[in-house]
Image (cartoon, rainbow, N blue to C red; front, side):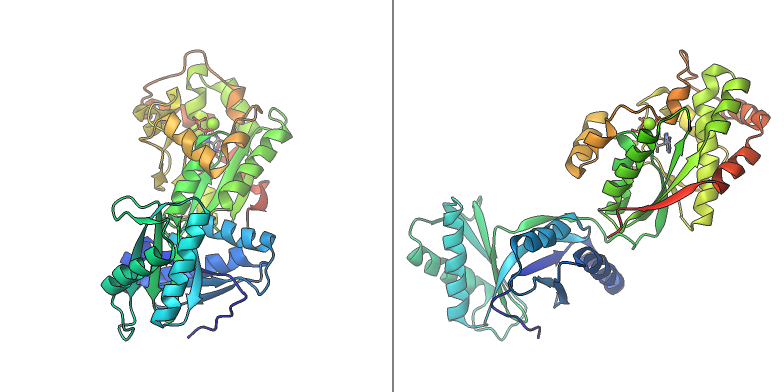
Length: 398
Ligand code: ATP
Ligand code: MG
């Protein structure tokens, strides 16, 4: 049984989808604990596992900043369905009902007028079953706090009690970010431009448990250092939802110049994308990444028609994940805003693709034609050099 002191705040965490993992569940739980411990480092908080729940204990006498830092970590982590600050009480009827009444008073203090009690009991030796806790607990609350009413269908406040190792009583819990703990689905390489889409794509893959490396192609001196720093910032924010991102910045200026000088203008963007894919695949192999990830969305721009996407990936064999493929821009922007990347993404520094913006880009490229043009450019050596001189930095690590 874990020790609890009355003077420290405790949060109860409900694991999310990983509870469906059967015999593989312990591995997912370990990853969740590892990620949480990394994110809570420096707060002095302690993590404890119980039957079906995790608990975070703030250090005794934690100040408001510490509490906020702990809650920020809980809010960001993938793998939790819900969490709440909880009262830890003795497993007696009196202690539980007193805590329910305190929780109800706190709800009233926060402007609530209707409530419902939800009860769970894993310790069957507790004298009240969950039905009795709901009905008798509800009656005790109504007696003590007459301004409250019960609403079983649409309560403003859900007051929950769980009888486990101890009795846990909490109200108005927060929804977690759900998903799976980052690190449980291997690692992928995100092609991170400075735009709106690719950070969202990376975030969505993290939500499925994938750890990320990222590659940003720039074209120094045709693109500014501000553009590069923007990619760094985006990697920091995106990495902060996972276990950090190792960002590789690769100088593609030489490759872009060769394309510009030797290929039909209308093909330039597709050929550049093909070169990016080839470079990314080589980097992914070196970094043990199992797939590439892009922010492509079907037909959003000329280079993202189904034919051009086919051309883009025609020279590589790695799987390419495109989590935004069926999403419209508005939905993507909504996610970008909610995860905090949008404001950085719309900063107006030209990215490397702006070096060529053909007036009449090929819309429905033929992969054979693309392959012929691509081969005639003989980019392999340039790609190798670009990768050898890549800059690597850690972004958003706990
Ligand atoms: P984004 O908002 O991600 O820039 P976009 O709509 O501008 O998307 P494109 O410029 O066509 O799309 O790029 C499609 C995808 O190719 C991007 O989502 C990203 O994954 C990858 N990509 C484009 N430019 C770069 C770059 N400079 N470095 C790394 N990846 C890139
Ligand atoms: Mg872009």
